[in-house]
Image 1: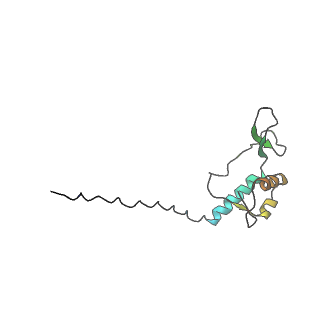
Image 2: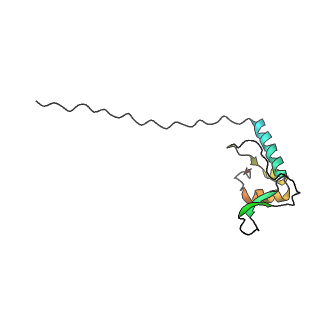
Image 3: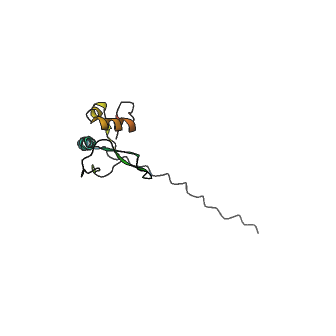
Length: 117
């Protein structure tokens, strides 16, 4: 006697990927504190990355101004985040000339003329 084939199970449709939740908007007061901290750090900025003049030393921190002995070269402005801070041209203009040169050389302005740091 002839039996029909057993019914086949249809696989369930693929689960759509979970949507990433947008983080809540940043508190503007936090942003201003972060920007103030960044501006303070930039006021004290005294090195850039560059090729060392010491044979075989490679790339490292190169002084862009005279640095007194004992000066702490690096400091933290808080834990790393994915947030950026937009510096307007008037913000950049308040920085020392040697820092303005680094900011302008490495951070391109957006359509609004702001540089995201």
